[in-house]
Length: 563
Image (cartoon, one colour):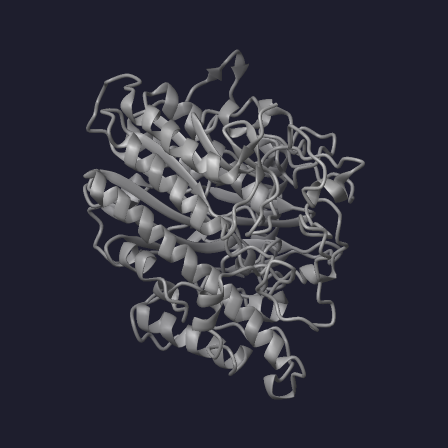
């Protein structure tokens, strides 16, 4: 098997993209829009400037100012389920990834994209689109190996990170540069692949966010030479833990978070009110949920560590925005910007995990660097995060801030876990008021339907001999053009026994594992789920619980045993 290093692979990116761009697949309907879907990983609802945050995101803010923001955009609660749903237009269980990338032996929980589903890339490629992906895949089974610990540290080599039938190149993406696994060292990523070839070595100065943007830029620049429209799925690792950032980016935020959790959270909410994220600017209605922790910042013995951790989180987002700017400039220079639909999404709410408490050397968490230097998991916050040899995360207290104004975080079906920012930008096709915010509930499974709608492409009933599950997503193109669309009758959620359902009239039920009782909220009047109405409206609760049971049976939701 040929060995590829990162310097060689980035050169190959240019050549492959050139070949892609110089070859016409079909020559039909050259005026159909190009499509770019950009996905951030574990970013909080209020992290971006255009959603109230103090993190500087001028490029994303510009998309928001000239596009449409969504205040009620749902994901599937965690990384791989969301990605499977986004890619297929189905619920994650129907797509085969109801949990993580392990095979739990049930149809909805196999850890791989089902072949009874098609990806956006497969559908658009059939319709004559060029298809490319850059970034994090994380929808393929990744079984553990006996030498997992050494493999994670790049100290042994294997040719495949999963069965190659599950690589992006076998699911409709003609071009791919990125990682198969979910968690990576930003300076020396594990499971990095160019096409289908493993990339074996990292040059000095490598940083994932920059490298992915460089690859995406090369792909766009060359693909734009073809008469055929292109589709690009750009899935950044940022700002998922570990907290790894460039020193100059961290320095920019080194003093920003020293006022602590409550002060930052209150400032974010006031800015959200000014921006009119949920209501008209300055609306007096208080939607800010109470902070979930009673700890006083003044009494916090780890102030320096905690403030620095959040500074690194901000630095990772800041750098991602800079690199998105690079991609946008390449698009402008290609002359294709006006007729390109750009969707920016997030896979789930900010993570409340304390990754430094995990067992190193397991699954996707290395114990050593390539050099053999031990990786520090600062369980007692004894070492500041940011550098390659330290693996840490911001934890639940900062996650509660990042997800302002909601409660909870990634993996939980309350709004802090499943409701995330989304931006649609399309200079040549957006007729909704620029800079406006829609409260229409949408879901990542709607991305497939929307892409097919704008491309005038069909969703297949069969593909490569496999019967295809009917599309669940509903196009939100009418929202971009007329401000309203056909609404989902319901949207269901399940992940590791966390359950929820939102009805078409915005009532929501939630059930936490081990808690027993369902909670009931009216999101029309209680956007941040502060008032459980289950006792006050038992008939409504009964109706929604019955709808959940019907949805779960239809969508292959049969929770597997805990691992």
